Image (cartoon, rainbow, N blue to C red; front, side, top):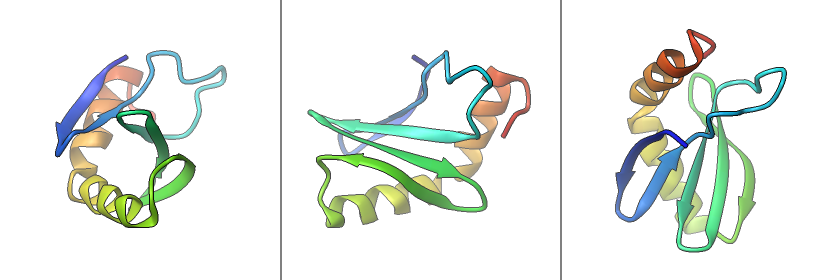
Length: 83
């Protein structure tokens, strides 16, 4: 499970097996028991949420957007340019 980065207790990561065929570029975010998934396009778009409040999701989305280049580069490096 490659971890891209961690900030304010939020762990941004993806799974090494992201489906067959490979799902489009996205990032998972975990804090405690809460988990969310964001599609990564020109900006982060919420795909799934399990436990985060709307306020937290807005914060996470801003963090993801601020680090979108890092997320894409890490995804591309791991999955050979699929993002």
